Length: 227
View (cartoon, rainbow, N blue to C red):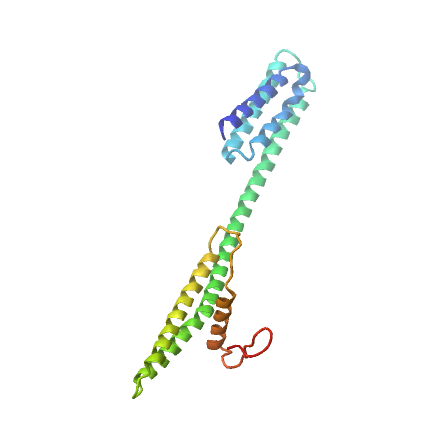
């Protein structure tokens, strides 16, 4: 608890204690429950029990001081009401804290399981996405090797294969980088420009070397075959 909370609690306890010293107000000991409720979220369970015990002691002390030389009368019933109220409120708060702590632990376990599940899904997605450029790299590497092993090596075609290998290697790196961005804790909401031509080329590359290679016809939006 901070300094202000401690001063506030001591002030409330002192006011209630002084009030219960007035014979006609000795039933006000029930107001100690305000202290218990006030410190609920500001202290540990051990401190809560200590404060509750102090409140009980002060309530009983005030009762004995007020009735030191006078009959107890119905003061006993008022004291009993205050004591029972303090005990019950303390018990309920402790049970509530325990239930909340258990719920928080369960939530942490579920959150951890959800993170593991998400990591598994991300791993599968990465494996699927990165398989496309890797397959393209392998295909162009084999193709470039064949162009170079010909009786009359075609250097231009081999260089074209090397360029395709370089582009797909960069695309594989972009995929990894994009997934890393998705796993960041902070979320950055901002507007950014989008290169539709580059996006279209990447989509075409995926189709050309994916499982649907040769089964998909690519056309312009207004008709006509895509070059």
